[in-house]
Length: 555
Image: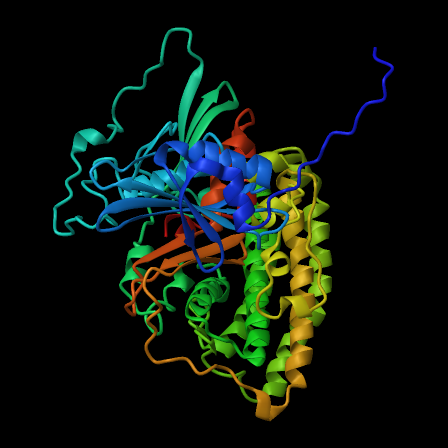
């Protein structure tokens, strides 16, 4: 053993500016772009992995938030939107152009696991191929689908014929892989109450343990991105976001689009409207979490009469408030670019009283939930130390929202990338380091408490707001035409996690590219990590703890 004093390891400063990042990447950068919220570095298709690995390990960009693919007249392009879990305002875009005749690029999956599904979607809808991808095949459309719907040469009138031979015969005799094989294939879904929608989980059992599973999505694909690309910024896009996460989270979805479009067009939002947005969004968060908690208890130990109905009861109280505010119970269409569509309902005093009555009853209801759910021995046995998702694995899959915070990741865009009125209010980000199914449930129940604190402060502000200063919308042009080739990615903290929108403008009143980054899409990818090696009941609990909504996954 050496007796010499160890020398301190030289700590290299982390690159911060665009110029420092360019120096770090060196010759791999062949061109530069400037997106609205992030510097863009253009790299060659065969330098993707080295570039992303360098940005992750030497610059701290450990969150691959989104992958966007699109086709231009002369090329295809993939954009990797990178952030930091410690500081999501520090962003960078890696742009990878490929020639039209050969749209082949290196896969990012060996660096970020979340790129698996994102690149499969890019291949499926746009037509970019990714070398070194572990399983490059269609993800939303059937394997027999002809063409790529978001490519420029896609023929919408081409008939799509799926031959019968592509489907397994349900009457075919069962068989084993071999004489000594002890595996069994089990289909869970797509029509199964525990899948919370049309999700098909292909599960392989080795005895009673899950040896392998694959989430088969795409049963609910509704072409939301295509429809938004055909709608005008000002009037026609806003009704669509309500239909992504349709579990009472519509205003959160609307805010994701509003934030991206408002930053793209440099629109201001009055302070009064920001408070209304913040209050209504947190009401949506409570309604969403209530249903998540109720259905989770139903999945895990079948409690319908008590917990599920109690959760629906409290959710209905929130729905009544949102109906008074927006006129609808599910598809609200309440936000507008530059503000909200109308002011609070009259008489205002009755509306505020209704909210306060709900908030006053909420602590007792939450205490009851903890007694019946988190204190239940059956639920504890089924959820503690099952569905474990370590924080580094969660980060690699791009997990956000209660799924990430249940793994101890202190990440919340309301605080870390402030928007609305959140940075003016007193509230806390809830985390739990259990990393299991119980932790994700616990985080949601605690978040309801924090949402209630935010709502109460908003009500206090709105009650005292001077009548002559209640401006609900800024002066927005009737037709919005952002400058051509302006690109932006913006996100909000939705009920399930980071809901992001990428928009590229082409100088017209409709987007050239509109990409939706649904949090459930990335969170659901992590299901094999949580369930393999466990049992079927544990899989059901893990799936319920993710709180996925297939309208947000398939879009």
